[in-house]
Image (cartoon, rainbow, N blue to C red; front, side):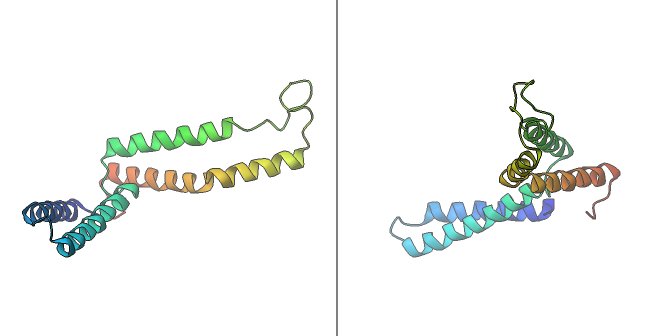
Length: 135
């Protein structure tokens, strides 16, 4: 989503809002259609923002930093594979069970999706810093 498309969506949303204000309160059918169109346009913008399409370089850096903190915190919450009774952290956890637990934690936290999103945002930022607008 580029700036021109975003501007067009903003313009259409403003026109819809103006029309909603002009309509009589009992124009339920037209109001319903206008509200549905508003929702559709807002969803297009939301998807564009989530994908990083219309974020500035500073916003991309902030989102990247947040994802990096999320990933670091996720891995920081794991028990160590060397946990044993002497550390007071695990009481001798079976390594097979420990690794299975880690795999399940990764799946529950969707850590692979988070890493993929981080890679995409880093690539987008690098392209933006190079001045490449094709990505």
